Image (cartoon, rainbow, N blue to C red):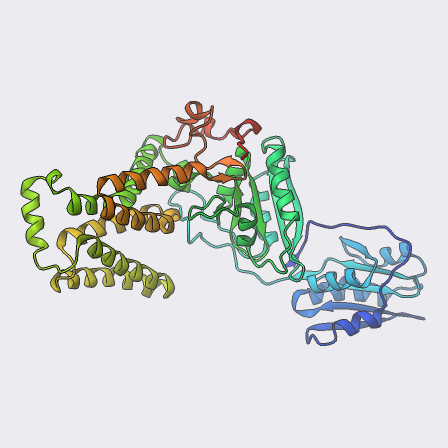
Length: 484
């Protein structure tokens, strides 16, 4: 399949600064570099292209064949353009520009007698087929996901957005890699200052190479935090919904994910299935997700605080059972809990790195064996294994927050072990203060909480999923932006 770019430009100029021998010398060490001299009646026209990323059949049919069979010599630039039957082309003015086009997959033809060079669109880059999403699977909604080819990803968005207000700006990032990225937004829905900020930060990037979307995510959100203040998704329907809401999206060639900004904390509690299921049931599920988030964050620290400093707050019957279960454990509770956390994290990391079929079985069996062995060996009590198991299950319910939750849970455990419930409360306050201090492209991370729109949007699409007729309206505006 030919790769049709959407950043086509034609520049003006009187003289062409490309010499065929210079261009051939620059690319002489590449095995897939092809120079084809097209012989006409009284002249030879050199053609340059990279075989591995170009459609050779297309080049032969639409460039080589028309030129070699031309009945008259090409004496003007207009005649050169008319002699070749291609849909998209542009002028080349210097050696650097010619190299950029050839290496990007655009064949370059040099008419030396005219002092004129043209590049053509004949790209053909192999890519993965559009497959089912592996990260945000949906039971009743769309299952299409992005792949690594930029044009395919844009086409998946285009077919869902038949609107002239969709704007797609092209950016070339990385001095050496020349990676193509696009900025998408809906004109009239996305705030102008948001679009300007993202565009400015992308243009200001001075990376030698950009190999993925994470390079742009760090440029847009350089803050030191474990929480993702720039969203990402591999589902085109989710990106389209966010664009219509008034956000921007960035897609990078070679990355099967699209970035979205701004990104808010409560989006982590939402799922693609929420918009294809009964809204009352979805609201209940979101409450469950929020409760599981609180459990995974607070339960381990609360358990350590009670069993270390506040035995009097535990019911008497449970205290005796807890004392019996801990009678053979040589470690204090905080060491016991952190040890079980370590076992769990090792099991989860091993399951992540191994192939999917093996990793899933290993993580489940490993957790069962380690938990049972730890109790049998006297390294942990049964209560600690239960608390760690609840933490493990609830942390999986919100996978986007797994890394942040695991670190903050350990922080809460240490604070609770040192200061009891006072440390537990302090750790929670520090977490809330940290979340409140974060910004996503100058928007509050906890939006709409703490803004004038808190109550008006609370029953729309935060914890409560309102009617789709209300959810589908843009909700960002310049006044919700809060600069530091």
